[in-house]
Amino acid sequence: MPRILVIEDHPDLRIEMVDYLKFLGFDTTGADSIASMNAALSKQCFDVVLLDLGLPDGDAMTEIAPLRAKLGLAIGIIIVSARGSADERVQGLAAGADHYLVKPVHLPELSTLIERLCERLPPESEGWVLRKSLHELQAPNGQTVSLTGGEFTLVLELAQAEEELSREHLCRRLQPGGAVTDTRKLDTYFSRLRSKIRQQSAMELPIHAFRNRGYALSEPVKIVR
Image 1 (cartoon, helix red, strand yellow):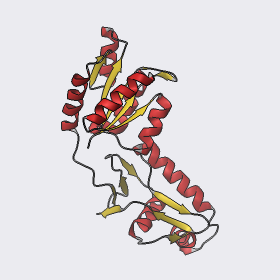
Image 2 (image 1 turned 30 degrees about the horizontal axis):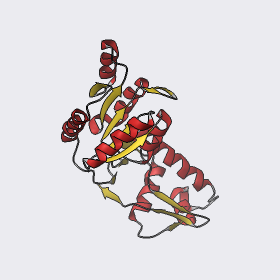
Image 3 (image 1 turned 180 degrees about the horizontal axis):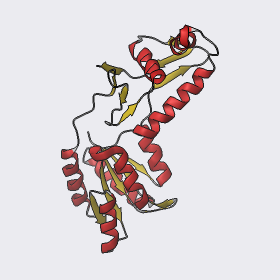
């Protein structure tokens, strides 16, 4: 089921588009600002983004190029805006948008464009994949993150484990000679790893921390050569 993110600050129009797309069978989520758009993209992988330009916290035109650079062709971008000059349409398409629609939007036209974009999307993701030969983690949205030796060791240990791993065990795997020094540093290490993966893939690595005990993955990570 294609996943659609509708970014529109006008409540009635946002609800209208979200309800219409849900009626057609699309898994659709609404957002009303650049901040809420980025929050949604950091938590879930979307197939198509419908983007209004004039949002309360800024001009969303500046968000198109970074979004395209980060996600490539794995996501479709359709601008839906009241700004309809020829120069603005050219600017939006040059930044990386696939289509530029001027309000008021004909909803059947919008749904047809979404369907055509979904035809070009890559096959359904195999989830999180850890590539041993490259020390690389691939997110479900297809984005890859290069890992340091220590980062790779932690993810590999968690991916191989069938249950929660203790903080002491993970520290032994990280420290030279297997010596545990301060398990509290593990929290900082994981925090930096999560932040790195979020920034480079726009997704959250599913690591679950058990207070004062250890860590485990809440989703499987496939290990390949």
